[in-house]
Image (cartoon, rainbow, N blue to C red; front, top):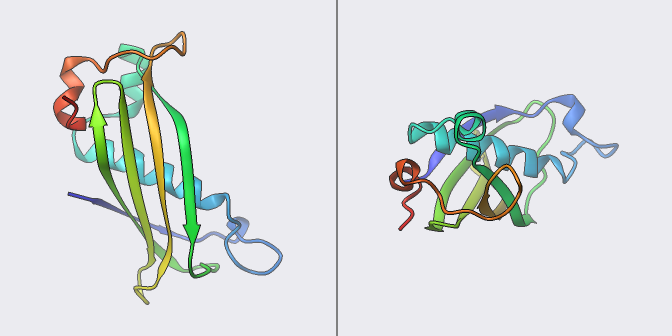
Length: 133
């Protein structure tokens, strides 16, 4: 099931044309991903600090459809579309809360790594939350 995260576009996130600067969509994806984890009982901060597990970005993409503007409320829908013990792929859909217009969609692929930044298997205690086999 996707997890929805709501945010309001801040003035600082817009460019000279008055629309959201493209790189901010990746920040919104991160917000969605952290909330997706939290909804499954996993605090990303705890994974890092207590277990030394990092979610390293291996791939990221975003398709822009309709510009978002200052003070617009945005809904970021996040879901894990693929996972196993060494990686997880997230898909995102960003829509205007009021209009329902699709603003952007994207994907990120993450490799589970240890503190030494080398790939590791996800510890058993997290596998159910990530649906990792």
